[in-house]
Amino acid sequence: MKIKILILASFLFCSCTGSIGAGSLGGWDILVFPVKESKLDSAINLFFFIDSVKYVVPKKWEHKSESWKRGGYDFLKARFFYFNANPEEMYYVSYISAGSGENPDWTRLSVRAVYNEKWGGE
Image (cartoon, rainbow, N blue to C red; front, top):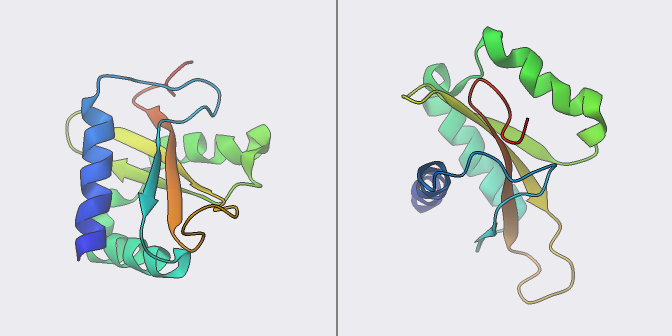
């Protein structure tokens, strides 16, 4: 439950900053979750399962989520988060490899782009 709240708080913060885009896959700050990637994946999957109707990317925006694959970013491990609240937005979030630094088992994510009728920076 703590992970779910942390994810929601992270996305809420990013949506309230007033920034629309971070350039061509620049991303905002890296968000570090003190859990292994598999545990965070399970929490995200549970989050989508519980409220799947509210957070599924709508058909009208599916082509936008597919554009990342066509654009050559399919090598990244990434997820799309859709929020139907006003303003309606979709976040492209990718996993960042841990490397060999401190706490290499912790999971790192970065919001790469926000879609709100256009991808930020378009």
